Amino acid sequence: MRTLLILLFCLLPVSAFAGEAKDLAADPVIEKRMIGLAENLRCLVCQNESLASSHAELAEDLRREVREQMQQGKSDKEIIDYLVARYGDFVLYKPPVKSYTILLWFGPFAMLLIGAAVLVFQLRKRRKAIQEYELTPEAQQRAASLLSEEENK
Image: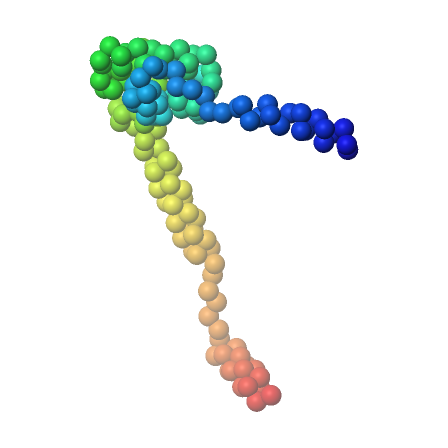
């Protein structure tokens, strides 16, 4: 235990030097703009991470490419168009509605509607399967007498 505490105290100064990663661009405005743009772009390697948060080498290369294009004075739309032309709509977190992305955009709603229609159909089918029995007049009298006996108790 004592050794562990000494080891922890020895490692404490090391963690004090750990901090946020420094901006890679010389201009902090370009770096902030790049991060804003990269948050809306998908990492092509890590697929569930944005380009801004990915640590993949390809993501670092793409961020460098975006920085270079920003330094050349290109607009965000021009940079996005360049990336889409090179990597397709997959690079966008919010792909545009096109003929081949219709299923992506409206598929969940279609599945919800299909599920609701199947549920309604099954409930109606089940309701028809349950038969309602009509009581004979003798059975109604017997039921009424049983109910009155219960109320008198």
